[in-house]
Length: 462
Image 1: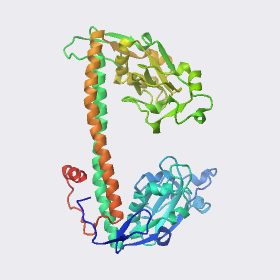
Image 2: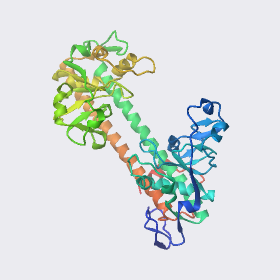
Image 3: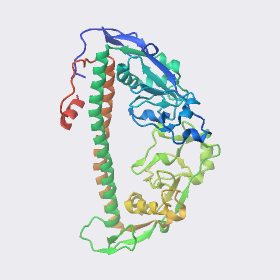
Image 4: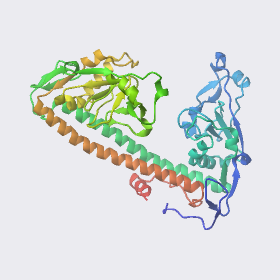
């Protein structure tokens, strides 16, 4: 934050979430500077309440927008009159009192007049000019607000919680300057983050294209080609064969969920792999992504245990077609019914693991699905997946080539991820510093022309 100046003098803060404040700032509980109330939901059984409505109505998911300019749906005037829903004026704030995942505690500002459900609270500042500053204050304390109601547990926030939130209170014009500063500066950082995310997606696409080309066309661009006779493969090297997965796999089988389901999962023990652990770039088994079963259940499910060198393939849901190789010296693990184990001869299993990531295999998997309904792959369909099979000496060269190229792509992707993390940290620190007065932005003026990307990157790196 050495780009910005601090205030001349500070005082000890009476606010739990800030140690000091500029001397001339006040502090106050949110209930004393705003009106706070929950919404309501018209009866779902009365369909006429939800048809051809004109009253904007929000559900909890709306808070994922920073500025809400479109309602979740519309209810009728009759529905509004027969429920506890209340109008919330434009520019006010809404906070999710409950909700799945990370929704609880999220805040958004209204760009429209609206109503909302009972799982959301409206915060209407007595002076609406403070609304945007309060948005940034609440946003910067998202986790602190969640902690008021059991953190990441299912406990919900209530109006008493929100009313007791202590807020710094700059002078009104100062709060407007802080909000304008944060709107502008965070937008610049968000743009850079988006560019890095786009770069990561391009790297993934390029990596898949390189893998696809290597396993279907080979490494010699001058090799004589022939028609494979397979729509998804096109022309392949003349001396390569075309085969099916079922001709080589010694096992094509999925796992199962133990009796008792999620109730028997543990925090340690034998790893139990699910589709959310299987990605094209490898297994993701961080503690937050993994569940475990005990040794007894593991032995009962011997047929679903994985071995080093197995290829794991997701066969249901939105992640269908994702696959990866089980690495050497992998600990004991089982899979559930959404993951298929492909066990292959040692000589070709690594090559097949790359084949499974190719466009030709993913296109075949898509073709097995009916329309937009991704019903899942069965073992017969998996056995029918067609691929090209080079001589063994070429297989080894292709594997080494793909590994080498993958290292380069992984390094670039890692650098992009690190850049995103740094920018996110910078963004968080900037918001916190501005809303608590650690930096003085009273005299900040928005640039008349947009800064170029290089200038922004230099500032973010400070």
